Image 1 (cartoon, rainbow, N blue to C red):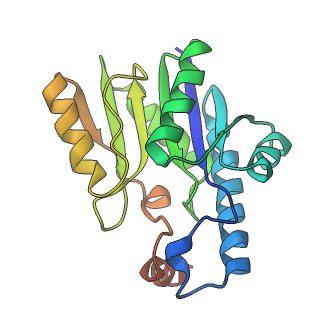
Image 2: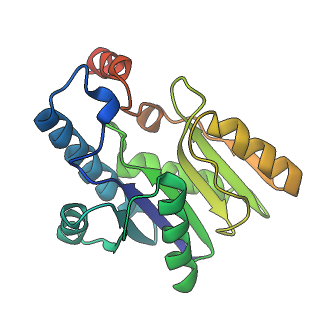
Image 3: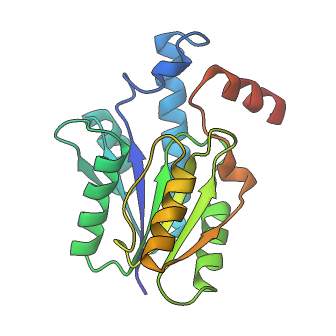
Length: 197
């Protein structure tokens, strides 16, 4: 069964705006690029991978790391980017997809592989989510088949994904992952990062 990892990478220049009180624009850009590189490298655990790139720079990074990429014509948010990636994967014959945030400072290939192995142990249609620390967010989402539920990234997305799966009779599984739990969105997340390091 062909599984595609879809890495959602925003434009580095406009990423991490909410970290403004803690980091200057240059530091935010460097952080966004470094985390994107980690996520793209980690996504190599899947059969195939594609980066949905919010800028030419993000696309060039994906290409340098050996990943396919789709350049967004305009940035319309995480759900629109995810839809673009899923459409591409489905056109290429994907049986399942893994949507992966590029804001994860500790993600690695092993953590992605463990998620995919856990998903393989489940039968039938499946949505498997990695919860974010705090805020009820979702840092990674495995879908089999790729359009088995809708997309609800944003505030309290974990609960939204669970409700959607329940309404459709789809198995919804939480996959805890220390390497994928922390995403860097707000200044308190940097404190988490410093403590972990």
